[in-house]
Image 1 (tube, rainbow, N blue to C red):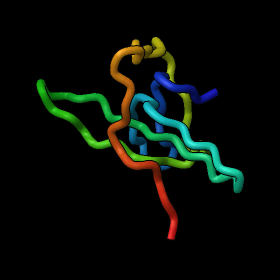
Image 2: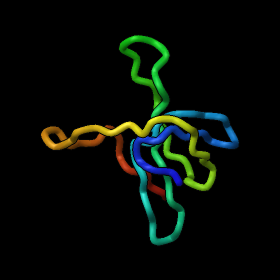
Image 3: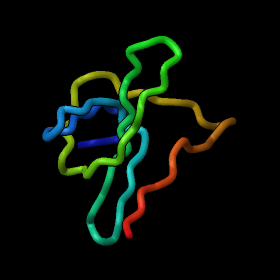
Length: 81
């Protein structure tokens, strides 16, 4: 099961990263925001909204953050025209 903080891989493109957001829609087009892991010091790699059914959960530790003092977001939620 895909969950916040887990590592995931897009089974079509091979893109991998950490799940930092999940959006559930009434229409069933649920999406997950996946942030790539930086390979260089001080680099902030791109993150992408991907359909949840394209993702495979990878083994590894779940990342958890203490957001009690500084809640927030880094990208706008996905939209469709």
